Length: 147
Image 1 (cartoon, rainbow, N blue to C red):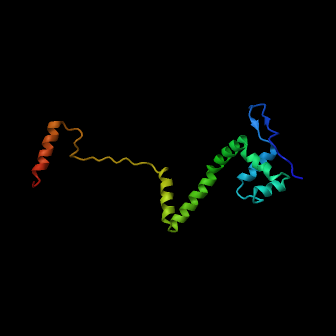
Image 2: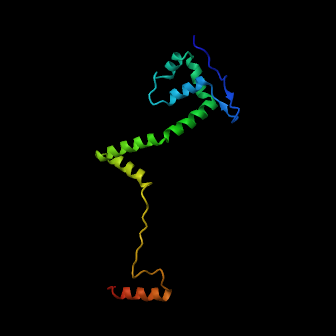
Image 3: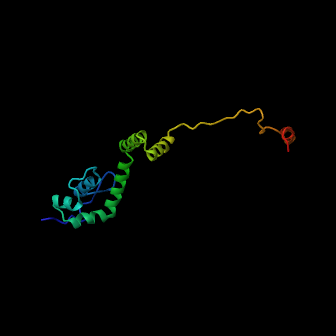
């Protein structure tokens, strides 16, 4: 008969003083974060592990569980292996002619491309001229125009 998992079982780590999730909750969270979920639904997971499906719904609404779920999901989603596989897929699609994928790939790699600074060495640069010198330069430029 399925049991009610409740909120009991949280312990305090004596070294860190942090609350530690019960093993059954951790097992459920591992299943939630797995790439391939077997069984496919929370209800089936609960039945397979001897819990009522309302129990796992209660776990998912517990603020401690949600906080740990969010933390682990964020950590998982920015893992370099996952990011690289998405970048690889974008690159492949871009090479195969997908314009949107090409645009997204180029936006991504722009972060890693060194920025170039363009320096114009122009004889007629005006930044160092005094007002009188600038006026004279403009006069000479204007005299060559048919106004």
